[in-house]
Length: 208
Image 1 (cartoon, one colour):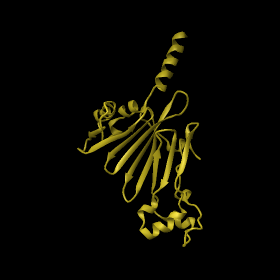
Image 2 (tube, helix red, strand yellow; image 1 turned 90 degrees about the horizontal axis):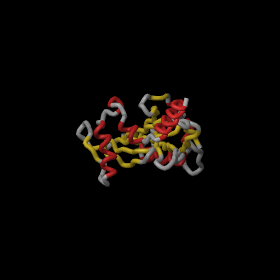
Image 3 (cartoon, one colour; image 1 turned 120 degrees about the vertical axis):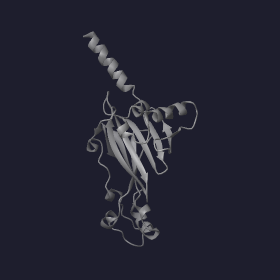
Image 4 (cartoon, rainbow, N blue to C red; image 1 turned 45 degrees about the horizontal axis):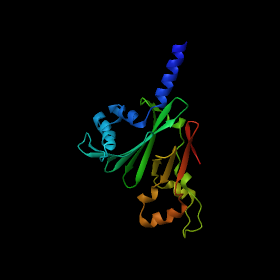
């Protein structure tokens, strides 16, 4: 009985002691087509030595780790893409990993996904309901032309997501206007919320 109790305590401490870098390094190659395990190990080694954390990836391009804390990391994966990871508490002994990948095309657009710390993909709906295009709409009396919610929602929807390195929040920004011509973008701008912030509460992201 005492052995079982001791084992449970040690297991709990081990889980709680996880950091995002160790989880990142353990990522399977199937989820890391750009970076090898050696690449992923080198990032932290470079940072701890006070060096710029730049590696040559599998495609002979350069990837850079821009930020690393115990629970958060950010990578400049390529010249047109970035990746963030955040370790989030599901309960007292289990964490999940939130991964945000952002691609720069006509506008920045992000995907959000969740994994267990041993990299099994988890259902997105269990952790967040992503904002719809119309969630960024706000009425405005400042614009000369009237843009209805239906007009707003009919445009191409692009959305950027950003995790915080300081707290357990995620912020979404509508980038649809960046795909439009200058005149259309100016018309839509007064009707667009600057951002939507979600807080991590009881194992899921909840909109403020």
